[in-house]
Structures are given as C-alpha cells and as structure tokens.
Image (cartoon, rainbow, N blue to C red; front, side, top):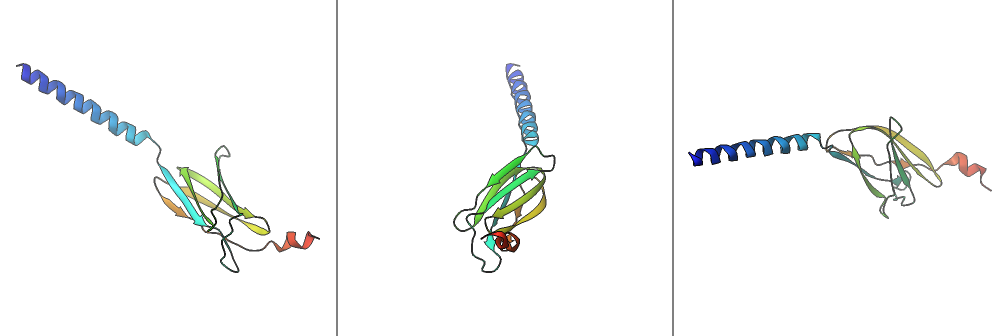
Length: 123
C-alpha cells in the first residue's frame, strides 16, 4: 500500500514538473539572428566603419551593432517587425524592413554606394 502511494506521489510530481517545464519553454521568447556583411558596392571591400541600427516598428525597441574588420555583424532580436538602417561615412545609407520569427536566421548584406550628393558639398 505504501508503494502505491509513493508511486502515485512520484507520478504526480513528474506530471507537474513536465507541465511547468513545457509552459516555461513556450512562454520564453526565442531570439532570431540578423547577420550580414557590409561592403562597398563598387569593390566589394568590407566597410568596418559602418553602423547598423535596428528599430522596432512600434518605436520602443532598438538595437545597434558595428561590423568587425571583415564587415561582418550579428544581432540577436526578439520576435517582431523591424526597420534596419545601415550607414557609413562617405556612403549612402541602406534601409530594409524585416519580420523576425522564432529562431530564424535573417541575412542582410548591404552593398553601400558612395554618397555623391554629400561629397559634392565638401571642400
């Protein structure tokens, strides 16, 4: 009789633990990865001086990144809709909108062209 009670208690504890674990796994937001390489459009040379800004469509969420020497960058993002802006001194900026879903890998590799409008204004 005590063995039955012990087995029942074990089964109940396992059921509760399984339910809590499953609920926690479903409620935790998973992050996606936005990555890419920022290069010069003409020469495909990396642009390490670039800056990447990611803004949520609601305006409250924002992320930033800088590429490494090879022009590569990576940003972890929660689910949502974002505007990605990439700029660098002497280059025209590029913008893209993206939807981010659970653990999705999104690649955005902008090819920046020289900013001829601003360059003409410089002495």
